[in-house]
Image 1: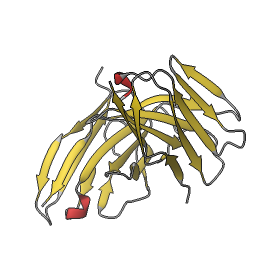
Image 2: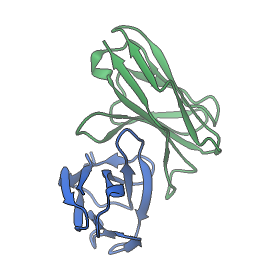
Image 3: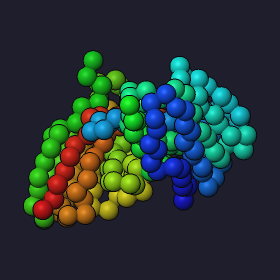
Length: 108
Length: 113
């Protein structure tokens, strides 16, 4: 079956630094979604990417969908303490297959 | 503006007991699903429904039953609880099956002793 893999599993970041988390699928995806889950909370939808090579930005977050639609990335610039949490990629559509997530901690 | 509501939030069960996790959404969403989340394993799909009267199995359906008698409700039943079912359970819904935001409930923490 379809598998979505994320790396790294953990990311420890100094406040103000940038980091990137990567998502790779064993199959071509029609679309991919990204979610954020704060500690003790529930996943919250961030964005959906549909087109090959698509790039979308949300303030300090930049999401990219690979040309082959088998990988995606999330880049966060100038990390803040509010970025703490676990970021998941998932796809496609309603029968979401989730990656294990990247858990981000921030050193002030 | 409740969104997706799950009850109970916390539950402790003894091995062999049965229980139902309730999920309701007030957004008239066609699609609903249940996930379980275990440390280091992301979220895994248990069962899902694309509309009232229609249910199907996800990745890890064993030990769980669902029904969808109304658009609003999608309960998850544990038939005979086992310690391996200790997990956090999330209910989710979406307007339809393609290209829509999926909304998650706040989760139900279940411990089976």
